[in-house]
Image (cartoon, rainbow, N blue to C red):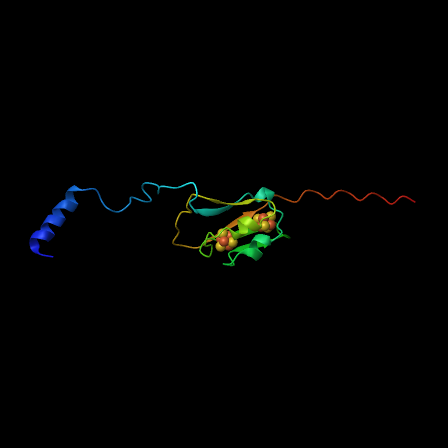
Length: 126
Ligand code: SF4
Ligand code: SF4
């Protein structure tokens, strides 16, 4: 590129808008079917572990005993296999993006509400 062309380009860049996007200062444009991030409604989860077993990225861990569910955001590839596998429809992919992080933890951890008390067994009739 010659000096004239370079100067012309530099001047044009000074007076025109930046070509780059202003994200995250201005939120990125989102579309209805954008694959942003995986979310869970933990209150509806039954800790069956099907989401974890269907995940090709090994990103989900479920503990029925502790009533916990967690996803490693760095492993998740937003494929929605877990969403399709969930029998309670408590997983969803929303068109929003998780904020970027430079430090751990990269895992989103959810603790479900305590299990409802089991109904008392009726005494056997003699
Ligand atoms: S969206 Fe795909 S990669 Fe992410 S947790 Fe679900 S199954 Fe795994
Ligand atoms: S498949 Fe659904 S109900 Fe089962 S553990 Fe995963 S999120 Fe919970």
